[in-house]
Every structure is written in C-alpha cells, then in structure tokens.
Amino acid sequence: MSGAVGEFQTFPSRLVGERNERLANAARALHYHNAFLDDCIRVILPHDLILLGAPSGMGKTDLALSIAASNAMKGRRVHYFALEAEPREIERRTKFAMVSALAHEQRLPVASRLNYTDWIRGECDQDVKELEAAADQRVLSTLGALWTYYRGSRFGADDLGRAIMGVHDRTDLIVIDHLHYVDNDENESEVRSLGDTVKTIRDISLRIGRPILLVAHLRKRDPRGRQIVATLDDFHGSSNIAKICTQAIAIEAARGISAPKWYLAPTYMAVLKDRRAGATGLVAVANFDRRTKSYRPEYTLGWPTKGGTEWEELKPVDVPGWARRHQSIKFAPPSKDPKESLHEW
Image: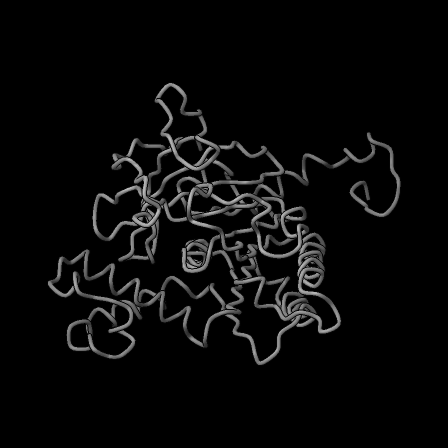
C-alpha cells in the first residue's frame, strides 16, 4: 500500500516497490510515432494527460489520428472519441489517406489529381477501385485495435466519463477529439464548465491508469506579428486546461516558410509543457505530407526570435543530444508579409 493516496505515509515507505511499479509502467509505454515528439517527450506513460492544440483547420485531428492509428498498428488498443466528426468520417479519411499513399507508391497517373472531396463524391471510382480494395484489406489487417465513438445529439462530461469507464480495462490509449465538443453544463459558464470537464478527465486518467490524448482549440490570434507558436495561455477556455495536463503540444502552420514540394506543409511543432523533463523552449519545423496525412520522418529545430515572432534554425553545435532524428531541412527564408504565410490544409 506504499502508493496509497489520501493519507500520510513516511517518505521511505512510499519508495517500497517503487522500482517495480516504475518498470511495470515503462513496459506499457506507447510512442507518438512522430519523429520530433518521440525524440523530445520520448514516450506516453499510463497516467499521462496530453493536451494537443492548434488553430482551426491546422491539422489537430490529422496528428491525433496518426498517433492513434500508429499505435493500433502496433497492436495497442486505442479508443478514439470522434466528437467533432460525422459518423464514419474518421474511417473515410484514414481510408482515403491509404488510397492516396498506394497511388503515389505505385506512381499511378491518378495520384497527382486525387483529392478527398472528389473521392467521397465517387468521382474517382474508376481510377481507384483496385486501390480501395487494397486499402480495405490494409485497414482489416492493421487497424482492428482502433475503436471509434461518435457522439449523439447531446454529450456532456458525465456521458464522456461513463463511456471511458466502459472501456478502461480494455484499452491502452484514449483519444478525445476534441474537448470543446463536450457539451457544457447549462447552469455553468463555458469557462468553468471546460475547467470542470478537464479536471474530470484528469481524475479518470489517474484512477484508471490509462493515458488520454485531449485535443483542444486555440484562441484566434491576430496574424500580424503574432508569435510563431501558441503559449499555454492561448488554449481556449479555462486556464485549468493547461494546468492539469502532464504534456502540452502545439502545432501551427509555419508562416512564410516555403515548402520544398507542393504537397508538403511546413509546420511548427512545440512542446509547451512536459512535467517529466520540462519544456525546452525549442520549436521544430516538420513537413506534413498532404497526400498521406502524415509527417515526414525528420524535423529541424530552431529558436523563436524577435519576441517569438520569427524562427531561426539552430546551429549544428547547438542541436541537443536528444534530437536523434534532427536533420537540417532547407527552407526558403520566412516571408515578412503575413498574408503570404497563411495556408490551408
């Protein structure tokens, strides 16, 4: 009982069995399957509550789904709350990404003109029929451990809590996409309700010993001269959202950095909070591949400069030892005109 909570125990008694417990938790560790996050944070541990934030349309769901699917492909059980999406949207987006990846792997002429909107309208059926069959087979053989949940007309914190408790003993990772689609208590303000919801999620995570990845909105900011990545204060809603989490990650379009290829979207990525190792203050630039809805397996580290409004790549001598997959990616210099820096995914 050395790990018991809610009562005083001596410091030495708390350490009885500590090593065995720590190694048992380490054996259950998951990975982000993202080069920068796996280098910087290392692993996802059983009691982690990870906050992932980005402005609207900047790829929160793509990154969350990539983390979920990559772990499921490794045989880890993942339960994904798709609270913003329409039914089957997560499956459709995943399948299309596989179809697109197969088309590019096979260098098919259709690859360059494939897009999600035409695909869901059935405009590509003749060109991708065989690819769809292959994608279906890939889903069947690799994603059987990924479970999705779509909300009904109303879905509050109590509903979320019950749903999590219903699967807590048969899951390895829970993804909530996203926080702001959990309905508020009608008798509370939005800020207070959000804070209560996050606290409920954190309490559940600690009680069940399963990590939770929580996706959240960032506040809208003026694009003129704004910081290249958000701060903890930019998460929409109560400050408790950032205070309670164990790790906080922010992503944002790398404004003004030119992509080496049309299908790549340079993206700033930063760990704003890490209760284990501490935030480094560094900002990575990684290339998001629009074709496969995934990040390329390398990144470049840099510092925010000029009050956080510009980015400067680290000199090779300054690259930290933990950045094992760091590579110097050649980008065009950032544009001084913020209008030229905005791009949609």
